[in-house]
Image (cartoon, rainbow, N blue to C red):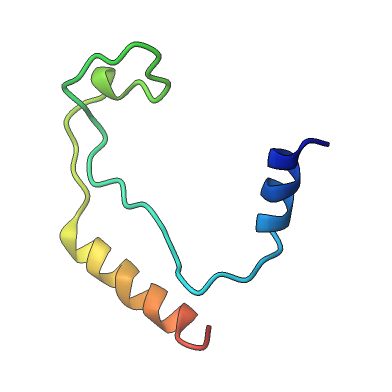
Length: 67
């Protein structure tokens, strides 16, 4: 096991103080990136519902408030 593999393995067990997450706000893309694996340029134009996003944020806060 090389040094990078040891660091990556250890990172899985080290508690983090910051929570990171991604929000996908659209299901399409107007770019044509080589190697794109999401097929977003082929998808129909669709956006996230802001009311649903607000509910998700509120639920997330409720779930992580004790962390």
